[in-house]
Length: 226
Image (cartoon, rainbow, N blue to C red; front, side):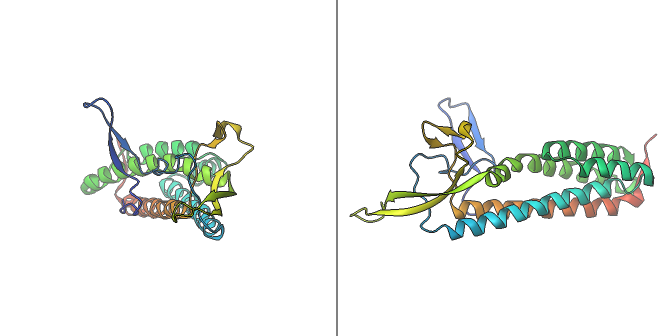
């Protein structure tokens, strides 16, 4: 996995119980995005730019997932392959696509790879880790896809006079009442955080493409296990 971005999405937090440690995962909402009365960005344009970049990057993730699924079925007969690929491409939900990719990975690796068996074992571990990221990161993609760039008036806390200024942030849609609690949004994203999502989606895209390439390399060594 490529290194995470500068926002520090992975942190270790001690709980009240000294024996319990809670790890914040990369795909969790970034620190600060759930804080109440958070001040937004001073311009809407960086948010719109980051939003377009992130949503486009996620479509790259979906394309890479499709490439991986195609590669995992290169060894089966044409009729079975076409049926499997159509079933995969028709799935709208990432969790269902992740499930089908896991199943295809199990079928592909249930083989004797001869001298490449160690490489096949590494591939199996990487596939599990990458698909775990795939089905977790979609929650942040959905936040972006169903969010609304919102304008607000807020004191400028950076100077002593604290004049009222206009700020912008990506908030949950106001139609989603379950995402608003006591008039506070469940999350509140700034442009820099959305840009980090875009980078992480790009890393995931690359990881899926590498897996697809690895399937192609391992294919010639694959024999059906007895």
